[in-house]
Every structure is written in C-alpha cells, then in structure tokens.
Image (cartoon, rainbow, N blue to C red; front, side):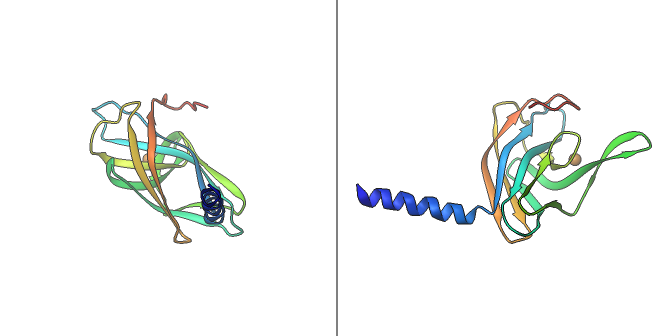
Length: 146
Ligand SMILES: [Cu+2]
C-alpha cells in the first residue's frame, strides 16, 4: 500500500521535471474524402527558461508533415512552409485555423470526426513529444471553434 503511494509520488515528480514542453487542446481538422491534406492545431506551452522551437513533426495519418503559417499576399490568405515554430520561455504559442499549423500532406485515409491520429513533435531542445490520441474534429473554414 505505502509502496504504491511512494511509487505514484515519484512518478508524479518525474513527470513534473520532464514537462518543459506541454501540448494542450490538440486536434486535427476533419476533411472530406476528396481532399488529400489536413492540418493539426494545438497550444504549445514552454515551461522552461529558454526559447524552444518546434522543428519537425510526423504523423501516422499522412505521408508528409510540414510546419506552416498563413500570410496575406495580394489580399489573399495563403499558407507557406516555415522551418520552425518558436515558443518563448514561460509562454505559449497557439496553432489555430488561419494561423500557424502542423500540415498533414498526403492523407493515408480520410479523416472524419471522431477518428484519432498520432502526431509526433520534435523540438530544438531534443525533446520529442508523441501525442497518441489526437481527436479529429469538424472545423468550419476560417472559423475558430473554442
Ligand atoms: Cu498548411
């Protein structure tokens, strides 16, 4: 009994120390079967004293995964690949529709609401975070669902 409590406690402390980066509210946009690509959104929290960059990502749901941002060009919103997404110390960076996102290119199967995908995030401090059950949700184009 006591041993179990001590084990549980030391587990908690270990995870406290390890969590310099936390991912919250991650989800993937549901897309109709005709669309080959989708995107993932989340909040990335940096609890450390240094700026951390998200530098790469992988997913079991897509052939290629890129980091993207949206820019205005000639009055049109368009997205482009970026090399990294920075998270300032003790701060958070929000990936959301119309802004920064993790782009899923070449979907291996249609993503419908209720599905779960795995996404692996690789950071500049050599931390890798694997999100095993990222929910697929319907997101209206250009709208933020909070
Ligand atoms: Cu994109």
